[in-house]
Image 1 (cartoon, helix red, strand yellow):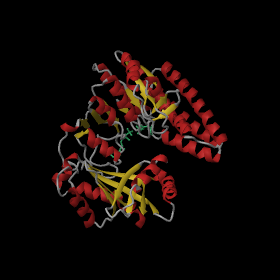
Image 2 (image 1 turned 90 degrees about the vertical axis):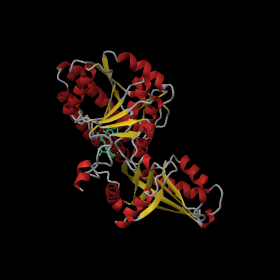
Image 3 (image 1 turned 180 degrees about the vertical axis):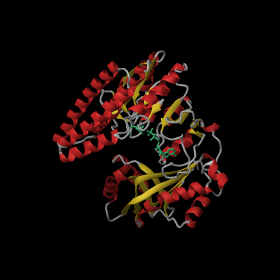
Image 4 (image 1 turned 60 degrees about the horizontal axis):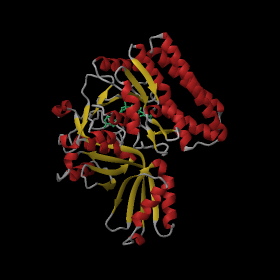
Length: 466
Ligand SMILES: Nc1ncnc2c1ncn2[C@@H]1O[C@H](COP(=O)(O)OP(=O)(O)O)[C@@H](O)[C@H]1O
Ligand SMILES: N[C@@H](CC(=O)OP(=O)(O)O)C(=O)O
């Protein structure tokens, strides 16, 4: 069971989460809990580390330390009834916060922030949260203990910020965690792991879902439950489309497409370990545990809807590479992709017209400068023109049921055309499980709402009202 940052945002919520864990344990289930940082803490750590590496302001570090102390002390006091356990937890928090303070002051003086130090600093969010959750569970009378991802056996490669577990992880986690389950609820930090040298790595933002499914695959769990602040995977982000409805069942492949195309409800890699062992994944609402939520199952068990969801990716940028010399020139695409791969730029979308005079690529906004630089240096300014646009978003409609059904693209672009939304770039893979396209940022929310309504994805209540 994984509880995200919003589910453990403060002491009262942690007490509620501990109560849920106790309930499932008492019903006879063996449970491992994975938790994220208290809501907002990872962003706070990353922003402060970034700022002090540039401005060197030690008082800004002190300010952060005071905020973290107050937040975590309050959470521990509100979540843990037993005084002895609460005091021990606060001592533990103090020790960790002291280490963090020293590391951040080091960054102020060095004026340098490497990807390795970013992982180290951001790991403190989870490392401060886990003792509080473990303390809350113990104080409700169930044996519990906190583990870092590394303690639990999640060992990764050295790709700081986006590390991948090495093959032996699954055996190591099984050896360390399974023996505890008969009478304990182990609480493991999500998001963070270790490399072979014991240096802290992270699995990417939102990576606690991934941690949970790695552990589940390792111990061959019956189910993975991801507890969120929403009622499961919905037909769109409810913050964008208030009428969005819970999808009761969805396939692994669709869930992966959906998270890849921006549905922040699930980490894009979280499904891989589940597929490895065929483990069903449930997405449930922490604050409405009686509601069934979404069940993610093997692809062949999916229910066929033409379109399941509409998603939005923001903070992306479009690069247009054009030039008459590209026509018929063998290897142009390979040169672009190799240059981007060497600069560690992840490509989100690609499109090339059959005239071959133009190629469009969507990348993460933070990779834009590096991407433009390496493409220009690969080709030289005179041969191809490289233009970029940051004010764009990617919108995608996702659903395995659209494969082989004519007219879906017509409905998508017809509906957008009727509402005068200009489509800048289009891409569809041959899996036909999604159609994705680029629009101007100012049109993006409207585009999502129009398509949500076009495919009648709104709640049953709204549907009957229509
Ligand atoms: N298709 C979607 N279905 C449900 N939630 C979505 C979707 N797309 C984006 N979201 C957002 O994802 C968030 C998931 O809940 P949250 O509790 O924040 O998860 P976690 O803490 O595990 O990251 C919600 O805040 C919701 O607005
Ligand atoms: N705390 C990490 C990892 C994580 O998974 O968080 P959440 O479950 O709250 O999305 C982050 O903010 O990226």
